[in-house]
Length: 468
Image (spheres, rainbow, N blue to C red):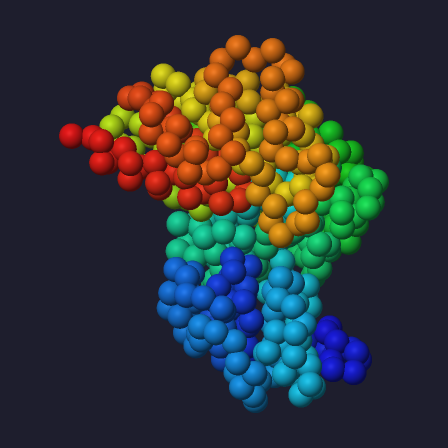
Protein backbone atom coordinates (compact mmCIF):
# COMPACT_ATOMS: atom_id res chain seq x y z
CA UNK A 1 0.00 0.00 0.00
CA UNK A 2 1.16 3.57 -0.60
CA UNK A 3 -0.12 7.08 -0.17
CA UNK A 4 -1.45 9.07 -3.14
CA UNK A 5 -1.37 12.85 -3.53
CA UNK A 6 -4.31 13.26 -1.12
CA UNK A 7 -2.77 10.92 1.45
CA UNK A 8 -5.23 8.11 0.72
CA UNK A 9 -4.10 4.52 0.66
CA UNK A 10 -3.55 3.05 -2.80
CA UNK A 11 -3.00 -0.67 -3.44
CA UNK A 12 0.28 -1.62 -5.13
CA UNK A 13 -0.60 -4.26 -7.71
CA UNK A 14 2.22 -5.92 -9.63
CA UNK A 15 0.18 -8.89 -10.87
CA UNK A 16 0.18 -7.42 -14.39
CA UNK A 17 2.90 -5.43 -16.19
CA UNK A 18 3.22 -1.87 -14.93
CA UNK A 19 5.06 1.25 -16.00
CA UNK A 20 7.36 2.19 -13.08
CA UNK A 21 9.89 5.03 -12.77
CA UNK A 22 12.69 4.72 -10.18
CA UNK A 23 14.21 7.90 -8.75
CA UNK A 24 17.77 7.50 -7.47
CA UNK A 25 18.22 4.38 -9.58
CA UNK A 26 22.01 4.43 -9.20
CA UNK A 27 21.91 3.64 -5.48
CA UNK A 28 22.46 0.04 -4.37
CA UNK A 29 18.93 -0.46 -3.08
CA UNK A 30 17.07 1.22 -5.91
CA UNK A 31 19.24 -0.28 -8.66
CA UNK A 32 18.49 -3.77 -7.33
CA UNK A 33 14.76 -3.02 -7.18
CA UNK A 34 14.81 -1.65 -10.74
CA UNK A 35 16.53 -4.79 -12.06
CA UNK A 36 14.11 -7.03 -10.18
CA UNK A 37 11.07 -5.19 -11.55
CA UNK A 38 12.40 -5.21 -15.10
CA UNK A 39 13.14 -8.93 -14.97
CA UNK A 40 9.65 -9.52 -13.57
CA UNK A 41 8.11 -8.12 -16.73
CA UNK A 42 7.48 -4.48 -15.86
CA UNK A 43 8.43 -1.50 -18.03
CA UNK A 44 10.97 0.34 -15.91
CA UNK A 45 12.75 3.65 -16.29
CA UNK A 46 15.02 5.43 -13.85
CA UNK A 47 16.98 8.58 -13.16
CA UNK A 48 19.90 9.68 -11.06
CA UNK A 49 21.80 12.91 -10.68
CA UNK A 50 25.11 11.56 -11.99
CA UNK A 51 26.57 8.78 -14.09
CA UNK A 52 27.89 5.78 -12.13
CA UNK A 53 29.08 2.26 -12.90
CA UNK A 54 25.89 0.91 -11.32
CA UNK A 55 23.84 2.49 -14.10
CA UNK A 56 25.50 0.22 -16.67
CA UNK A 57 24.15 -2.83 -14.85
CA UNK A 58 20.70 -1.26 -14.65
CA UNK A 59 20.70 -0.49 -18.37
CA UNK A 60 21.79 -4.07 -19.11
CA UNK A 61 18.58 -5.25 -17.44
CA UNK A 62 16.51 -3.20 -19.90
CA UNK A 63 15.89 -0.15 -17.71
CA UNK A 64 15.79 3.18 -19.58
CA UNK A 65 18.12 5.44 -17.56
CA UNK A 66 18.30 9.23 -17.61
CA UNK A 67 21.12 11.17 -15.95
CA UNK A 68 19.52 14.22 -14.37
CA UNK A 69 16.03 14.80 -13.02
CA UNK A 70 13.06 16.04 -15.04
CA UNK A 71 9.36 16.14 -14.15
CA UNK A 72 8.53 14.93 -17.66
CA UNK A 73 10.03 11.54 -16.87
CA UNK A 74 7.01 10.56 -14.75
CA UNK A 75 4.39 11.22 -17.40
CA UNK A 76 2.18 8.19 -18.03
CA UNK A 77 3.66 6.01 -15.28
CA UNK A 78 1.70 3.84 -12.87
CA UNK A 79 4.09 4.21 -9.93
CA UNK A 80 7.14 6.20 -8.93
CA UNK A 81 9.62 4.38 -6.69
CA UNK A 82 12.04 6.57 -4.77
CA UNK A 83 14.83 5.99 -2.28
CA UNK A 84 14.25 7.38 1.20
CA UNK A 85 17.27 9.58 0.48
CA UNK A 86 15.26 11.36 -2.25
CA UNK A 87 13.45 14.44 -0.93
CA UNK A 88 9.81 15.24 -1.61
CA UNK A 89 10.85 18.34 -3.58
CA UNK A 90 12.71 16.27 -6.18
CA UNK A 91 11.19 17.32 -9.54
CA UNK A 92 9.99 13.82 -10.39
CA UNK A 93 8.62 13.04 -6.93
CA UNK A 94 6.87 16.42 -6.76
CA UNK A 95 5.38 16.01 -10.25
CA UNK A 96 4.12 12.52 -9.39
CA UNK A 97 2.46 13.76 -6.21
CA UNK A 98 0.87 16.67 -8.08
CA UNK A 99 -0.41 14.35 -10.79
CA UNK A 100 -1.84 11.77 -8.41
CA UNK A 101 0.77 9.10 -9.22
CA UNK A 102 1.52 6.95 -6.15
CA UNK A 103 5.05 7.54 -4.84
CA UNK A 104 6.40 4.32 -3.33
CA UNK A 105 9.28 3.67 -1.00
CA UNK A 106 10.92 0.25 -0.75
CA UNK A 107 8.70 -0.70 2.17
CA UNK A 108 5.62 -0.07 -0.01
CA UNK A 109 6.98 -2.11 -2.92
CA UNK A 110 8.13 -5.25 -1.11
CA UNK A 111 4.71 -6.66 -0.09
CA UNK A 112 3.56 -6.50 -3.71
CA UNK A 113 6.73 -8.31 -4.81
CA UNK A 114 6.13 -10.87 -2.07
CA UNK A 115 2.64 -11.63 -3.35
CA UNK A 116 4.22 -13.00 -6.51
CA UNK A 117 7.39 -14.37 -4.93
CA UNK A 118 6.96 -15.20 -1.19
CA UNK A 119 10.08 -14.32 0.73
CA UNK A 120 12.78 -16.45 2.27
CA UNK A 121 13.88 -13.59 4.53
CA UNK A 122 17.40 -13.39 6.02
CA UNK A 123 17.72 -10.95 8.92
CA UNK A 124 20.25 -10.09 11.61
CA UNK A 125 22.51 -7.32 12.82
CA UNK A 126 25.39 -8.65 10.76
CA UNK A 127 26.05 -11.48 8.33
CA UNK A 128 22.72 -11.18 6.54
CA UNK A 129 24.16 -10.07 3.19
CA UNK A 130 26.57 -12.99 2.93
CA UNK A 131 24.06 -15.46 4.36
CA UNK A 132 21.41 -14.31 1.88
CA UNK A 133 23.88 -14.65 -0.99
CA UNK A 134 24.96 -18.12 0.14
CA UNK A 135 21.29 -19.10 0.52
CA UNK A 136 20.42 -18.00 -3.01
CA UNK A 137 23.41 -19.86 -4.44
CA UNK A 138 22.88 -22.97 -2.31
CA UNK A 139 19.14 -23.21 -2.91
CA UNK A 140 19.77 -22.67 -6.60
CA UNK A 141 22.24 -25.58 -6.60
CA UNK A 142 19.66 -27.73 -4.80
CA UNK A 143 17.12 -27.12 -7.56
CA UNK A 144 14.81 -24.56 -5.91
CA UNK A 145 16.16 -21.74 -8.14
CA UNK A 146 14.85 -18.81 -6.03
CA UNK A 147 14.71 -15.21 -7.15
CA UNK A 148 16.80 -12.87 -4.99
CA UNK A 149 17.06 -9.30 -3.73
CA UNK A 150 20.31 -8.72 -1.83
CA UNK A 151 22.03 -5.56 -0.61
CA UNK A 152 25.23 -5.98 -2.64
CA UNK A 153 26.23 -7.57 -5.95
CA UNK A 154 26.85 -11.31 -5.71
CA UNK A 155 29.48 -12.52 -8.18
CA UNK A 156 28.08 -16.06 -8.39
CA UNK A 157 24.64 -14.68 -9.30
CA UNK A 158 25.85 -11.91 -11.58
CA UNK A 159 23.84 -9.20 -9.80
CA UNK A 160 22.27 -8.06 -6.54
CA UNK A 161 18.78 -8.94 -7.76
CA UNK A 162 17.17 -11.26 -10.25
CA UNK A 163 14.03 -13.19 -11.12
CA UNK A 164 14.46 -16.95 -11.46
CA UNK A 165 12.14 -19.89 -12.08
CA UNK A 166 11.49 -20.87 -8.44
CA UNK A 167 8.46 -19.88 -6.40
CA UNK A 168 10.30 -17.98 -3.66
CA UNK A 169 12.59 -14.98 -3.40
CA UNK A 170 15.61 -14.82 -1.08
CA UNK A 171 15.43 -11.41 0.56
CA UNK A 172 18.09 -9.65 2.61
CA UNK A 173 15.64 -8.34 5.19
CA UNK A 174 16.75 -5.03 6.72
CA UNK A 175 15.92 -4.16 10.31
CA UNK A 176 17.31 -0.61 10.07
CA UNK A 177 13.93 0.84 9.09
CA UNK A 178 11.60 -2.03 9.95
CA UNK A 179 11.28 -3.30 6.38
CA UNK A 180 12.28 -6.80 7.49
CA UNK A 181 8.76 -7.20 8.85
CA UNK A 182 7.17 -7.10 5.40
CA UNK A 183 5.84 -10.36 3.99
CA UNK A 184 4.58 -12.78 3.05
CA UNK A 185 7.46 -14.84 4.44
CA UNK A 186 7.65 -18.49 3.46
CA UNK A 187 10.70 -18.94 5.70
CA UNK A 188 12.90 -16.75 7.90
CA UNK A 189 16.39 -16.81 9.40
CA UNK A 190 18.03 -14.66 12.11
CA UNK A 191 21.82 -14.61 12.23
CA UNK A 192 22.21 -12.53 15.42
CA UNK A 193 20.77 -9.55 17.29
CA UNK A 194 22.92 -6.71 18.64
CA UNK A 195 22.28 -3.06 19.48
CA UNK A 196 22.17 -1.07 16.25
CA UNK A 197 19.78 1.33 14.50
CA UNK A 198 18.36 2.39 17.86
CA UNK A 199 17.59 5.83 16.40
CA UNK A 200 14.77 4.06 14.53
CA UNK A 201 13.74 1.54 17.22
CA UNK A 202 14.13 3.75 20.29
CA UNK A 203 15.46 1.02 22.57
CA UNK A 204 17.09 -2.40 22.58
CA UNK A 205 13.88 -3.93 23.91
CA UNK A 206 11.97 -2.55 20.94
CA UNK A 207 14.57 -3.89 18.52
CA UNK A 208 14.42 -7.36 20.07
CA UNK A 209 10.63 -7.17 19.95
CA UNK A 210 10.86 -6.45 16.22
CA UNK A 211 12.93 -9.57 15.67
CA UNK A 212 10.44 -11.56 17.76
CA UNK A 213 7.65 -10.38 15.45
CA UNK A 214 9.77 -11.22 12.43
CA UNK A 215 9.95 -14.85 13.52
CA UNK A 216 6.46 -15.19 14.99
CA UNK A 217 4.71 -13.73 11.94
CA UNK A 218 6.49 -16.01 9.46
CA UNK A 219 4.10 -18.58 8.02
CA UNK A 220 6.76 -21.16 7.22
CA UNK A 221 9.84 -22.60 8.97
CA UNK A 222 12.20 -20.43 11.00
CA UNK A 223 15.94 -20.78 11.61
CA UNK A 224 18.23 -19.06 14.14
CA UNK A 225 21.90 -19.17 15.09
CA UNK A 226 22.16 -20.90 18.47
CA UNK A 227 25.57 -19.29 19.14
CA UNK A 228 23.91 -15.87 19.49
CA UNK A 229 22.10 -15.67 22.86
CA UNK A 230 19.31 -13.33 21.78
CA UNK A 231 18.63 -15.15 18.51
CA UNK A 232 18.60 -18.41 20.44
CA UNK A 233 16.06 -17.10 22.96
CA UNK A 234 13.81 -15.78 20.21
CA UNK A 235 14.09 -19.07 18.36
CA UNK A 236 13.05 -20.99 21.47
CA UNK A 237 9.81 -19.02 21.48
CA UNK A 238 8.76 -20.22 18.02
CA UNK A 239 10.40 -23.65 17.86
CA UNK A 240 12.98 -22.54 15.30
CA UNK A 241 15.62 -24.86 13.89
CA UNK A 242 19.03 -23.89 15.31
CA UNK A 243 22.49 -23.95 13.77
CA UNK A 244 25.99 -23.25 15.05
CA UNK A 245 29.03 -24.75 16.73
CA UNK A 246 27.44 -25.40 20.12
CA UNK A 247 26.69 -29.03 20.93
CA UNK A 248 22.96 -28.39 21.25
CA UNK A 249 22.63 -27.00 17.70
CA UNK A 250 20.13 -28.88 15.53
CA UNK A 251 22.43 -28.29 12.56
CA UNK A 252 25.94 -28.43 13.96
CA UNK A 253 29.34 -27.37 12.65
CA UNK A 254 32.04 -29.94 13.48
CA UNK A 255 35.79 -30.14 12.75
CA UNK A 256 36.07 -26.54 11.59
CA UNK A 257 39.26 -25.50 9.79
CA UNK A 258 40.02 -22.35 7.82
CA UNK A 259 42.85 -20.50 6.15
CA UNK A 260 43.33 -17.31 4.15
CA UNK A 261 40.99 -18.33 1.36
CA UNK A 262 38.50 -20.89 2.63
CA UNK A 263 36.55 -22.49 5.45
CA UNK A 264 35.99 -26.25 5.80
CA UNK A 265 33.80 -28.20 8.18
CA UNK A 266 31.43 -31.13 8.54
CA UNK A 267 27.74 -30.37 9.04
CA UNK A 268 25.42 -32.68 10.94
CA UNK A 269 21.70 -32.29 10.18
CA UNK A 270 18.80 -33.48 12.39
CA UNK A 271 18.10 -36.49 10.17
CA UNK A 272 21.49 -37.89 11.17
CA UNK A 273 23.18 -37.05 7.87
CA UNK A 274 26.68 -35.58 7.56
CA UNK A 275 27.69 -33.16 4.83
CA UNK A 276 31.15 -31.99 3.87
CA UNK A 277 31.20 -28.22 3.42
CA UNK A 278 33.90 -26.08 1.82
CA UNK A 279 33.29 -22.38 1.24
CA UNK A 280 35.89 -20.08 -0.37
CA UNK A 281 35.54 -17.53 2.44
CA UNK A 282 37.71 -17.39 5.58
CA UNK A 283 36.67 -17.22 9.21
CA UNK A 284 34.28 -18.70 11.76
CA UNK A 285 31.68 -16.05 10.91
CA UNK A 286 31.55 -17.31 7.34
CA UNK A 287 31.25 -20.91 8.54
CA UNK A 288 28.17 -19.77 10.46
CA UNK A 289 26.84 -17.93 7.42
CA UNK A 290 27.20 -21.07 5.30
CA UNK A 291 25.64 -23.27 8.00
CA UNK A 292 22.67 -20.90 8.12
CA UNK A 293 22.19 -21.14 4.37
CA UNK A 294 22.36 -24.94 4.50
CA UNK A 295 19.94 -25.01 7.44
CA UNK A 296 17.44 -23.21 5.23
CA UNK A 297 17.96 -25.87 2.58
CA UNK A 298 17.18 -28.51 5.22
CA UNK A 299 13.94 -26.93 6.47
CA UNK A 300 12.80 -26.31 2.90
CA UNK A 301 13.28 -30.01 2.07
CA UNK A 302 16.02 -29.26 -0.46
CA UNK A 303 19.03 -31.48 -1.08
CA UNK A 304 21.56 -30.25 1.51
CA UNK A 305 24.49 -32.03 -0.12
CA UNK A 306 23.68 -30.44 -3.48
CA UNK A 307 23.40 -27.04 -1.79
CA UNK A 308 26.77 -27.57 -0.09
CA UNK A 309 28.35 -28.54 -3.41
CA UNK A 310 27.06 -25.29 -4.94
CA UNK A 311 28.71 -23.28 -2.17
CA UNK A 312 32.14 -24.59 -3.18
CA UNK A 313 32.02 -22.28 -6.19
CA UNK A 314 30.76 -19.25 -4.28
CA UNK A 315 32.57 -16.21 -5.65
CA UNK A 316 31.86 -13.74 -2.87
CA UNK A 317 29.88 -10.57 -2.27
CA UNK A 318 31.01 -7.02 -2.92
CA UNK A 319 32.73 -5.54 0.15
CA UNK A 320 32.45 -8.75 2.22
CA UNK A 321 36.06 -9.89 2.68
CA UNK A 322 36.57 -8.92 -0.94
CA UNK A 323 40.11 -9.59 -2.11
CA UNK A 324 40.97 -6.66 -4.38
CA UNK A 325 44.35 -7.97 -5.50
CA UNK A 326 47.95 -8.72 -4.61
CA UNK A 327 50.85 -6.53 -5.72
CA UNK A 328 54.47 -6.80 -4.59
CA UNK A 329 53.55 -9.52 -2.12
CA UNK A 330 50.90 -7.33 -0.42
CA UNK A 331 47.32 -8.63 -0.47
CA UNK A 332 44.55 -6.03 -0.21
CA UNK A 333 41.14 -6.93 1.22
CA UNK A 334 38.07 -4.70 1.65
CA UNK A 335 35.23 -5.34 4.09
CA UNK A 336 32.02 -3.54 5.07
CA UNK A 337 32.27 -4.39 8.79
CA UNK A 338 31.35 -1.43 10.99
CA UNK A 339 30.33 -2.86 14.39
CA UNK A 340 32.86 -4.09 16.98
CA UNK A 341 31.91 -7.77 16.68
CA UNK A 342 32.07 -7.58 12.88
CA UNK A 343 35.51 -5.95 12.94
CA UNK A 344 36.76 -8.59 15.37
CA UNK A 345 35.54 -11.39 13.08
CA UNK A 346 37.14 -9.90 9.96
CA UNK A 347 40.52 -9.43 11.66
CA UNK A 348 40.38 -12.95 13.11
CA UNK A 349 39.87 -14.23 9.56
CA UNK A 350 42.95 -12.25 8.46
CA UNK A 351 44.97 -13.60 11.36
CA UNK A 352 44.18 -17.17 10.32
CA UNK A 353 45.45 -16.53 6.81
CA UNK A 354 49.16 -16.96 7.44
CA UNK A 355 50.26 -13.46 6.40
CA UNK A 356 53.31 -11.94 8.09
CA UNK A 357 51.42 -8.89 9.30
CA UNK A 358 47.78 -7.84 9.43
CA UNK A 359 47.60 -4.11 8.63
CA UNK A 360 44.10 -2.74 9.29
CA UNK A 361 42.54 0.59 8.38
CA UNK A 362 39.26 1.38 10.12
CA UNK A 363 36.89 4.25 9.39
CA UNK A 364 34.11 4.69 11.97
CA UNK A 365 30.62 5.08 10.49
CA UNK A 366 28.06 7.69 11.60
CA UNK A 367 28.14 10.00 14.62
CA UNK A 368 25.26 8.12 16.26
CA UNK A 369 26.90 4.70 15.93
CA UNK A 370 30.29 6.01 17.08
CA UNK A 371 28.76 7.71 20.11
CA UNK A 372 27.04 4.48 21.13
CA UNK A 373 29.79 1.94 20.44
CA UNK A 374 33.16 3.74 20.62
CA UNK A 375 34.26 2.20 23.91
CA UNK A 376 33.47 -1.32 22.63
CA UNK A 377 36.00 -0.93 19.82
CA UNK A 378 38.95 -0.94 22.21
CA UNK A 379 39.59 -4.69 22.03
CA UNK A 380 38.12 -5.23 18.56
CA UNK A 381 41.48 -4.70 16.85
CA UNK A 382 43.64 -7.14 18.82
CA UNK A 383 44.41 -9.21 15.71
CA UNK A 384 45.82 -6.23 13.81
CA UNK A 385 49.61 -5.92 13.91
CA UNK A 386 49.30 -2.34 12.64
CA UNK A 387 46.12 -0.34 13.16
CA UNK A 388 45.38 2.87 11.27
CA UNK A 389 42.39 4.92 12.41
CA UNK A 390 40.90 7.85 10.52
CA UNK A 391 38.10 10.35 10.92
CA UNK A 392 34.56 9.01 10.90
CA UNK A 393 32.28 8.92 7.87
CA UNK A 394 29.10 10.89 8.73
CA UNK A 395 26.75 9.24 6.20
CA UNK A 396 24.67 12.43 6.13
CA UNK A 397 24.35 12.81 9.91
CA UNK A 398 24.89 16.14 11.62
CA UNK A 399 27.96 16.37 13.88
CA UNK A 400 27.53 15.65 17.59
CA UNK A 401 29.56 17.50 20.21
CA UNK A 402 32.58 15.51 21.35
CA UNK A 403 32.05 12.69 18.86
CA UNK A 404 34.83 11.97 16.35
CA UNK A 405 37.09 9.20 15.17
CA UNK A 406 39.54 10.13 17.92
CA UNK A 407 37.19 8.50 20.45
CA UNK A 408 38.25 5.14 19.01
CA UNK A 409 41.90 6.15 19.27
CA UNK A 410 41.27 6.79 22.95
CA UNK A 411 39.48 3.45 23.41
CA UNK A 412 42.24 1.43 21.75
CA UNK A 413 45.02 3.26 23.59
CA UNK A 414 43.24 2.52 26.89
CA UNK A 415 43.66 -1.23 26.30
CA UNK A 416 47.45 -0.85 26.68
CA UNK A 417 48.07 -1.81 23.06
CA UNK A 418 51.81 -2.15 22.36
CA UNK A 419 51.75 -2.75 18.59
CA UNK A 420 51.56 0.25 16.25
CA UNK A 421 48.50 2.47 16.55
CA UNK A 422 48.42 5.22 13.94
CA UNK A 423 46.08 8.21 13.59
CA UNK A 424 45.70 9.58 10.06
CA UNK A 425 42.54 11.72 9.87
CA UNK A 426 42.10 11.87 6.09
CA UNK A 427 42.12 9.08 3.55
CA UNK A 428 44.91 10.82 1.67
CA UNK A 429 46.98 10.65 4.87
CA UNK A 430 46.07 6.96 5.20
CA UNK A 431 47.21 6.11 1.68
CA UNK A 432 50.50 7.97 2.12
CA UNK A 433 51.23 6.10 5.35
CA UNK A 434 50.38 2.71 3.87
CA UNK A 435 52.59 3.15 0.82
CA UNK A 436 55.49 3.93 3.14
CA UNK A 437 54.78 1.11 5.61
CA UNK A 438 53.48 -1.92 3.68
CA UNK A 439 55.91 -4.73 2.92
CA UNK A 440 55.93 -8.11 1.23
CA UNK A 441 53.91 -10.71 3.12
CA UNK A 442 51.40 -8.21 4.54
CA UNK A 443 47.64 -8.28 4.22
CA UNK A 444 46.02 -4.85 4.20
CA UNK A 445 42.35 -4.88 5.18
CA UNK A 446 40.28 -1.71 4.84
CA UNK A 447 37.24 -1.85 7.08
CA UNK A 448 34.13 0.32 7.37
CA UNK A 449 30.85 1.22 5.72
CA UNK A 450 31.96 4.56 4.27
CA UNK A 451 34.37 5.74 1.58
CA UNK A 452 37.32 3.87 3.12
CA UNK A 453 36.56 1.42 0.31
CA UNK A 454 38.47 3.80 -2.01
CA UNK A 455 41.74 3.24 -0.13
CA UNK A 456 42.45 -0.29 -1.37
CA UNK A 457 42.41 0.50 -5.10
CA UNK A 458 44.59 3.57 -4.50
CA UNK A 459 47.11 1.54 -2.53
CA UNK A 460 47.22 -1.17 -5.21
CA UNK A 461 47.87 1.48 -7.85
CA UNK A 462 50.67 2.94 -5.75
CA UNK A 463 52.22 -0.48 -5.17
CA UNK A 464 52.20 -1.17 -8.90
CA UNK A 465 54.09 2.06 -9.53
CA UNK A 466 56.85 1.10 -7.09
CA UNK A 467 57.03 -2.59 -8.03
CA UNK A 468 59.67 -3.38 -10.70
